[in-house]
Amino acid sequence: MSQTQNLSTRNALCRLTLGFSMLSYGTAKLSRNPYSTKGLIFVVLGAMKAAEGTVKYCPVKAMLQQNGMIGHTGDAKISNMMKEFTQDGMTVTT
Image 1: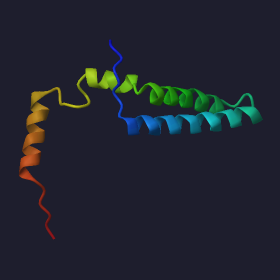
Image 2: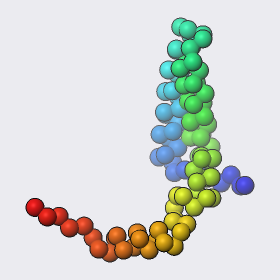
Image 3: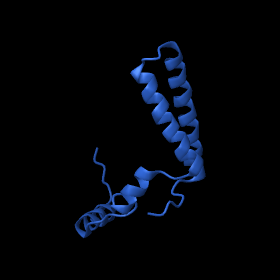
């Protein structure tokens, strides 16, 4: 599996900001109570999000794209249903 960038710059910056915020919050919780489970979870998840934002690669998104769950529909039946839905349009009755 090649690790090409699969995140946009804006998405990467959002993940980086969120990751550092979560990391700071978790560190603050752990400094007050070293046995805080919530703080440890925030540190781990924040570090993961910050790393994803830094390298512009999300392994979960790559896995979903590989399985056909993001970007295109894997089944022809679902694809036909979506085409029919978009062609019919939406009608509003009052």
